[in-house]
Image (cartoon, rainbow, N blue to C red; front, side):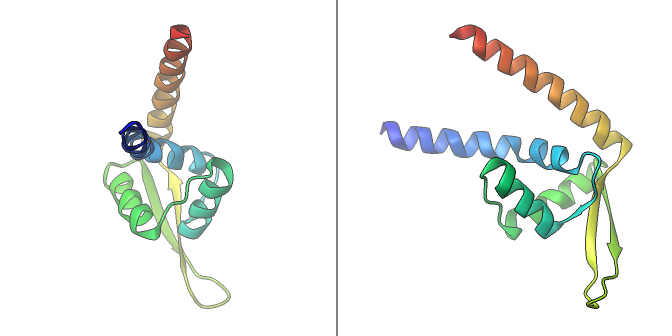
Length: 110
């Protein structure tokens, strides 16, 4: 029972922080989908499937936090590069402030 609870809780925390992590990965750097998935794996050890990434990026785009552009490649296969919008930058700043406050509050519980 304990392990099931921890797995469910971990899954919910992960879902709740994916947008935050993706916005951080895009801060100051345009990236395409595969690049984002690789960076997330390397920096957080979270594996993100294409079936999770692209719907999430579309949602962030709809919310005006990211924008995207197609860039032609020498290989002939264009890539969709994502970048933060000014609203995305402001949102990320607010998210970081909240995260730091939450982290400090949790640390105070110990």
